[in-house]
Image (cartoon, rainbow, N blue to C red; front, side, top):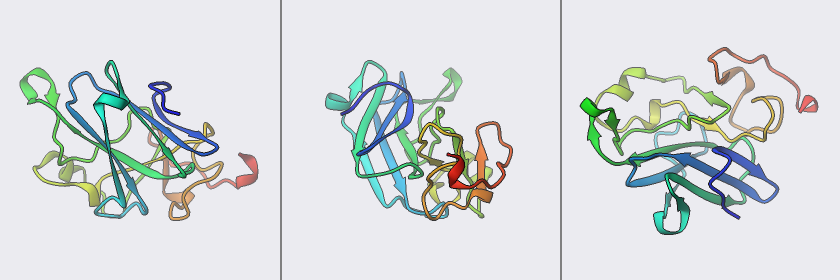
Length: 163
């Protein structure tokens, strides 16, 4: 099971489908993190363009992971800021279709704008189950008080029974 749509992370009973749109990418890697402060992903999955790219949609199904898995991407491609192209494979990128973010204590916006790896200080996305973030299942290391919804406001802590 792998699909180009819907965009973002879609949880299925036996895993999660990830889909990202990029017209200019030449290589995409899905990064899976165990904790929001991790400086390195616990697993990196290179998305094979021959098998897992449909037009400008990069997609991969990862069996065995669940809602709340922390993830991000690294994208290779042209670096031409004058023309709006800023692919830098050293940078951790959020999924623009994710439903929330987790913010490490050492978060640094400046680290995203300077050369070098920013994984330790970058925000990450928890995979969504289609419910609002923090209402349902989430990775054990993600505390609801550290969750932020897509518009940037902190979500109140909610019980799993409201999922």
